[in-house]
Length: 330
Ligand SMILES: Cc1cc2nc3c(=O)[nH]c(=O)nc-3n(C[C@H](O)[C@H](O)[C@H](O)COP(=O)(O)O)c2cc1C
Image 1 (cartoon, rainbow, N blue to C red):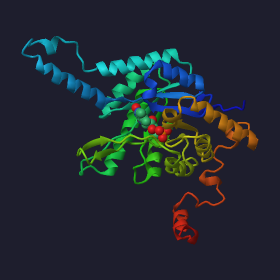
Image 2: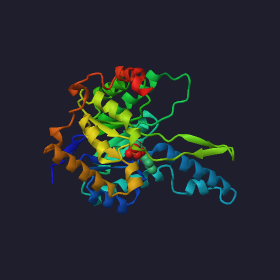
Image 3: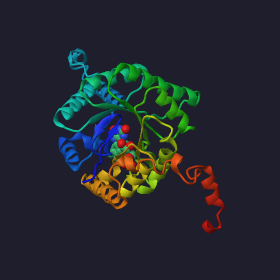
Image 4: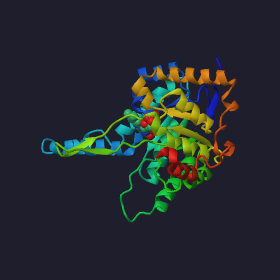
């Protein structure tokens, strides 16, 4: 057995394979299986403030129906405001108590205050680290990109000042200048940046003329954007670059580590191939390292990052133009 030990957001882990946030973390059975399969750490599915608001809203709507039966009912009923949050926090605490490997919580909130309030509550559950899931869909045409980005930087600064556990941020690829936002988040104290979240997009059923939720899992080909940015940013960024999206087989993971990833997060491959895929990924990594005579991840991590490339333009625009102009591609 070769040594796969490393760190994740500064936390020692025995493998660079991290189970990313998903509903797989909703049952203890799956969590135990993930641990037994050899993942380095598990990110528990996000606490979404929006989801809690929605369930509160639905509850209040339901309660309105009964107001004529009992006028006081809504006020005497135990306050539901934070029931959803409490449930999530209770689950995190239980998971932390039952698992040996590091447990990372994930949060998606709205306002600066609630990001901080929820982060503090999460820290109290004993979670080893916190991932800020910066997913949002800005729709106000008056809001500028700078305002949105600065808001994220402020959130991170405030959360970092309020908790002592490591904090990472999970980004979507939709920024005008990824390098700039990553640099600003690093300056604001990010212990890791996860590249990238995969956003589910809506679809339309043209027969029924109604909305359709499109849901498909990632494939290896979805990993190239992450690979490019891992290679470009890993030499510049002092915190961890954690690669995510489309890491399905061992080869996808090895590429990310060569590009300089500290660790990788996997989700789709666990849904598609079962939790035992972690063992397959581990075996494939070990077999490749053995063949290459590498003893540890440090022996090869970043060998294909931008600063180590024979062709320094390989991850840049020139390569794209070269490919478009090449006769072989016609
Ligand atoms: C069923 C499912 C549930 C997910 N839930 C969350 C979540 O709660 N929070 C989050 O940040 N990402 C969530 N994700 C996104 C994954 O963590 C991951 O970033 C994304 O799927 C890309 O990785 P992959 O290509 O390995 O699937 C979810 C993904 C799936 C498929």
